[in-house]
Image (cartoon, rainbow, N blue to C red; front, side, top):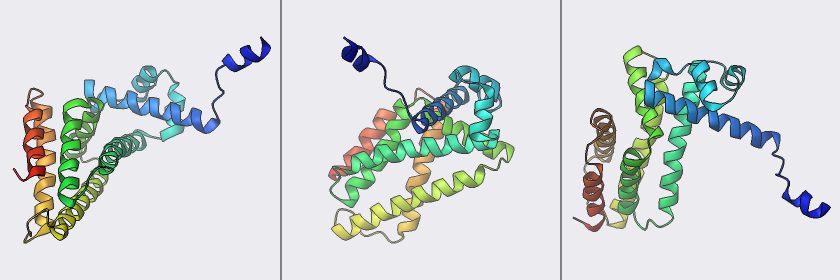
Length: 206
């Protein structure tokens, strides 16, 4: 019985695991408040109350609201990147990788509620001249480079027709993504499924 009782005890988390768990909880709480109530409502008091941790822990983990918002941006960006990397396991060409990237992005708009916090923050950064503007610019340049790489790979493997200016083509696709995301914020009833179907049809040369 002693062995059975011992085996049924919950495993003790390491300090690193506890830290990761608390940080994730705070990031989720911050994102939820951003989506539900906006940037100004995302105070340490509200975030700590929502997450079930002390206000002091928020300060300890992130230092300032700017630090917290930067962490939220990085976390949301990493979630999208992870989803795309998973899809890459089955992608067979530059064209497929490009279509998968666009589809994963649109799928996130359609189904990932807290992912919308990214665009709340983007809007706040632009409207209020926040320092996070530079982080968004860096992130969007990283996305543009991924799109450039996919297009170039597709041209080389013959799945994408030669493009006169790959950089411009990638910028256009990035603007499409951003425009779709912002439009969905304005009109949640927007038919994202139709956009996804259109994009996926291009995987087959439609």
